[in-house]
Length: 288
Image (tube, rainbow, N blue to C red; front, side, top):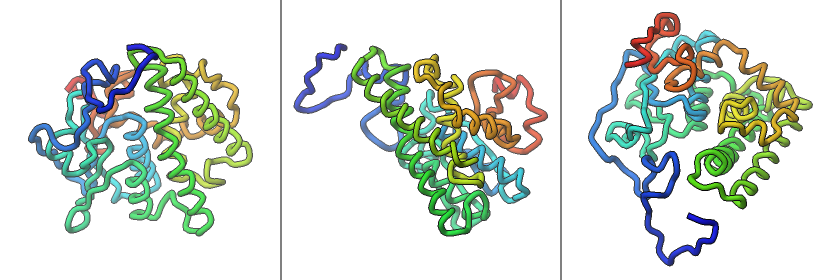
């Protein structure tokens, strides 16, 4: 593979393409095998992994519980994307796009599937009347930033993160292109947070929950190796202030643990079926 590349008239996939995640990439949709999903005791059933997109939803669910919404109790089942769980028939029925997270709400008849992390956040906010302002102007501003993240995130993860950290070869043009865009995004957030406590204003909302797992993680060195240094992330002072405030929230700390399979074992809760799981988890559960 070199930077001197002429695209063929008709593209066909090659086994050498894709870098670290080549095994889970394919040019067709749909199931690869039959596997039903487990269903626990709670109306809300989450099928996920603690990637940034997965953390958005577990943070939201834990914040709802922290705020006293008992109906937000949930089971969180681990979907191991490295093993292809997202291509099982049961998961594809919930999310035909085969991406985590995916949610089933069994409190309604028929049960409602919800997929795409932003859609899940909005669904839960409306279901419980929380973390989405009722004032029309404030609600609209929150949705502005929620959908900004949905559009901007792929530049950070699939663009910068892939070519900087995971691609099998370092391509200067690709890294420069996506670094330029990510730094523009960081500067945008930093400017916004200079005059606002939270991204959408004075109120903590689903916009913060969507943005934090991605941008909060990369500026503190939690993603893509030494990317925080490469991006000069320390220079975004307002963004760091916001990140530290949100990271200190108990519900956020719990939400980041759910469905985690890497990092500090003490911060991993591979599956969550009850609030007490945070206190009673054992190494056997982590290794299960």
